Length: 384
Image 1 (cartoon, rainbow, N blue to C red):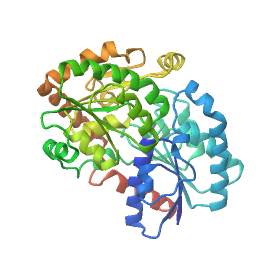
Image 2: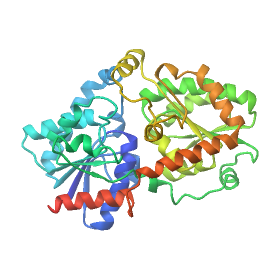
Image 3: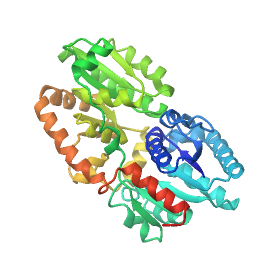
Image 4: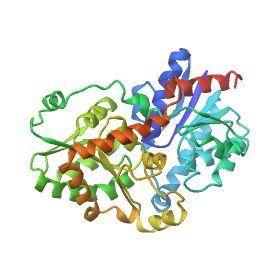
């Protein structure tokens, strides 16, 4: 059986790689094709073109890349037509995926269409729920409260849970061991910095984060930055943080990334799935995010939730400090991060509270990727 993946961003890449591994265990002869990133490549996947070409967010950020994105969309549709997969699994990135599915429908291509990660219709663009129902056969959701939004439009859904639960469970490392491995001074204060995995994110967040860490360095002269990154963004991130003059280390690979999280005293991250990963690792952190000024204005008008961070949405209160849109600046971030770093016991308590809410994202008695793999195989065998 051939399963075709369409992944549009690095967080979806990690999600899909977990699903691939679970599918291979349940169906050893299964084959894969499509679009993916570095985590999928590690699992033996060959992408049709680099994932980084699709990985962009925000209307004004997408506009300059639109000709390339449309070209890649047509190439993807052609590849699906040529390969005729039994199943098409689209992961997140509904803006790209929805248009692709429309093209496939016009071409009368009908693999089993499974979308993984529900569009956040509970936050904004509620009309998308009906569109997803029209274009897909099944929706696998990460959050337990999402299925009703789509089921009322006739779409079959399964809550499979969030694989961040399983991504970090097997990682065990001590700060001393980690520091010795990388030659980091024993007394160093470790701050993980994650300015994003897209050029548009890094270009906006890295300058802010650099200003913050320079201020933190005044109070913590033993500060040492850990900066997990992907190959596509490594050069840009290294150039940005190299100018700070603060000792730092670029971290490559998912396993080392999670080890960095677990040994860090604190973290500062772009809003997104990485916040769940940090929570799973017990790492105290804040999140930040912004677009350009016009996109910021559009989001403020369209958003219907009080919070940007999923933990805060689950808790219905502010647990993880968040600095988004107009609040994403060094003047607000610096004193907040400094306060948390000066009171590590309090920060750890908050991290522990966040971890309790994270447990709501795990389905009963099975790991999320295993649940998702069972759904995919049942659908392709007409058992669901």
